Length: 145
Image (tube, rainbow, N blue to C red; front, top):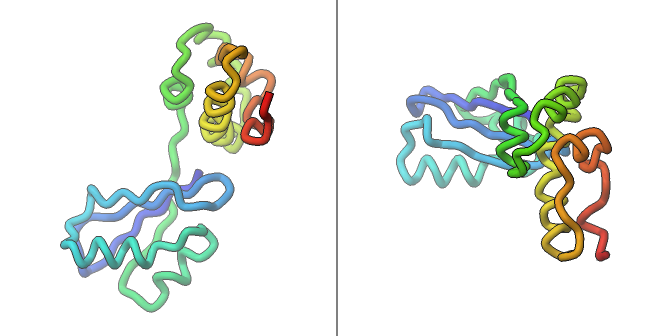
């Protein structure tokens, strides 16, 4: 995931935009900005759905776009995975992953969980198995059995 902070002399604070590893807009957080309803609407309208367009989208405005580090932690993974077993084993595997794989692992949980809802016979893997076998690379959204 990549995170951008947007500031402007026209409002106090900043807006955060978070894009997935695939470059698709995931979150727009305006809670740290003092924007009126018109400003909120304009920001939502201008924010591009694809990360590659973010600088061009605000080029003719007073908005300044700066990429900031997006923290990815093991606790974020465990909170998203929601199966709190074998934590020590999972953390050891997590620490060996690249930051990109850590992001992909967190992003892949939704597809995996959706698959598990469709197939009642399969139980959720322990988090260490999910990480060790790189389940996020599987095409869970395309499997029906």
